[in-house]
Image (cartoon, rainbow, N blue to C red; front, side):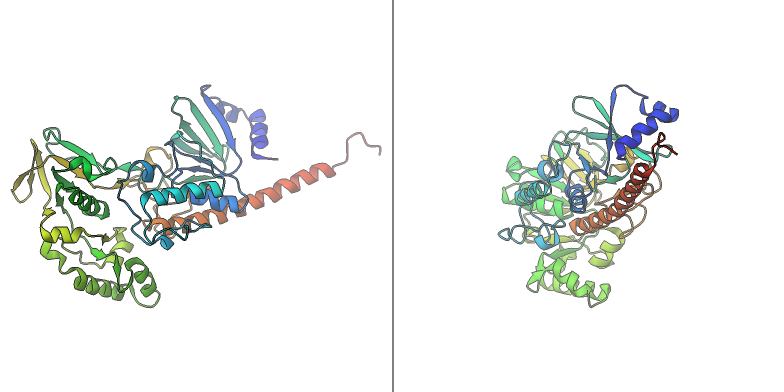
Length: 434
């Protein structure tokens, strides 16, 4: 007895079910026999592939018109993977051998599209999930989505996998005088190339990997960038001692305590990059790896920006007090003129806006309440993938765990259904002679 047959049987005999399933005639109802995955980025694709490999079918919903929409539609042209490709592979399929150590944006997108083809993952595009809620009466999840034509669909499923990730919505900070500024104020999700800002004075707000790289790109296109540094930041060389900094760190952590590895990283960084505090980039008190573990804050891997800061091609500025007409007043009282502002202020989870559940996910930040590595599983068939603050490595770990867990339930329920069917077939007919 499959999921659809089971639901039809309930609907025929349960008046509460009938009332709930028919509250709106405009909503088309679809039963999903396996898990429903919300999001067709790397996290959703990885989970769907792991499930497929175990014989469990799934349905993937995606609000955009393509897979990996963040990568395809909201990233700048010069972007490359910040970590070597071996740390960014999804489960069950590696990168092509001819790809460079740090694949380009387009190469990564090509890899993801090949991945989807390899595992026959066909997301339902242009489906924006507006609400997902567990129905205790049915013991199932009810997920409502709206298409581009405004038509609604309600999916009913046993398992729900939240794969919308950490970067679902751009963070747009409020600044006094934004309406007065007059020039362009863009989030990095709209930024493509420094060519659009050639010869212009551009203020980049945020000194993470994106902010640093946008500044470098602006320099390379003969713009005049300045960088707002509002907090302490760890800047490390992308490679040290002949290896990638990340790979070296992971290897050292197998043998040494995290604080010792942090000290080693900072000593080598000081030898290679100098004292970053002298150019306005103060380091946090905690080491880069310890800070990453505690807060999820990623160290910046330098790809050439520091050299431009040292040469004066990129100016470092303090926090913003307010915006004026084509000018910015900083907290130190200085005012400078700018033609445009780029906000490299990151992204946030949007889970609280659509998932009606308060136990697994925090309403404050939209992340699982339980820290890594225990945040992937909730109650009643709810799962999370891509919220580890550990990049694609964390995504792959979660995807494998989720697939293994659902496979156990899937096989158990399949045995249950087979035993039930067998018992029905073995019953003697009512008109047999005594």
